[in-house]
Image 1 (spheres, rainbow, N blue to C red):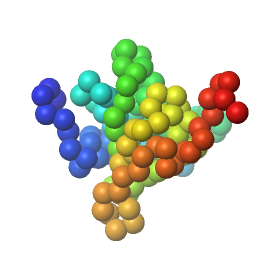
Image 2: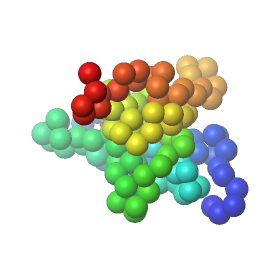
Image 3: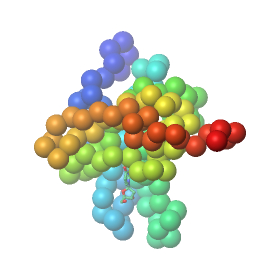
Length: 134
Ligand code: THU
């Protein structure tokens, strides 16, 4: 994937592929995320649940941490979907984690009519928490 940037539908397809690694025996909702960096790389994530439910982590945060672990910190887009091909919107915790790295990241998912829908993170999480800001 060098040179051409993946389209929004391609990013959703990569996110769908990532649902295959989801570990979600409790909710049975398998989620995948595909995160496009400013440098044009794509990092994926899936949700990972735990029998101590609160320790579970969403696909979006796994994708972000996966990218950070590889030295990438600037993100352009994130696509999120579940294994049934239904759109998912990042939870509040994931929005805050995304905001750490980019307020303007585009969140790509599908609406209830299966049409691609995009949001700016600043729309989904206005006034994100920042240390030292009131
Ligand atoms: N989940 C995600 O991975 N991403 C979202 O955008 C919302 C929820 C996961 C968490 C949990 O494993 C399951 O979906 C049900 O909430």
